[in-house]
Image (tube, rainbow, N blue to C red; front, side):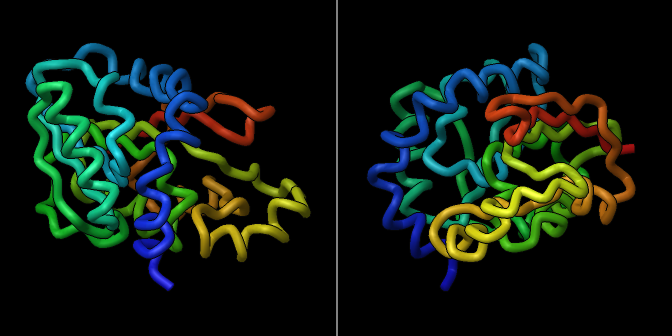
Length: 200
């Protein structure tokens, strides 16, 4: 089953469960951007657009998501905010976008959702300009962490919403042109992390 199906079902209630609980996490992640001006920034897996109200102004924004129902909410939110953004249906694991065209990529709560974390990270690196940065907010296991309950539940949860057994370092090792500038706990005793990458 494609993730488009469950997220189409979740789209109407997604914000009720996620907006308030993640707003501060998103704000802290986006602070890593600083105050850029005139940059081209991709929101990969934009969902319902919960990041839009927190973005610095005067940049060129582009959002991609697999689920049209989620994008409709993002479009409505952008209109309400008066924010210009180009939105497109697409798979972050295989984006139909040209190489090296973005200054930054925002990946909030998407790398543990997609079936192939490394593919999504590789695509983000591909569309990023050299020296560009990737902001990540998501839940990851540490290398060697046992977490038996998370690992046991992951196959079922992956079909409904998100995986709980993703080891970020395993995915990053497959994308050699990215290196870590910052990696710090976000919440849940470090299960959720703020990660800042740069493309060499």
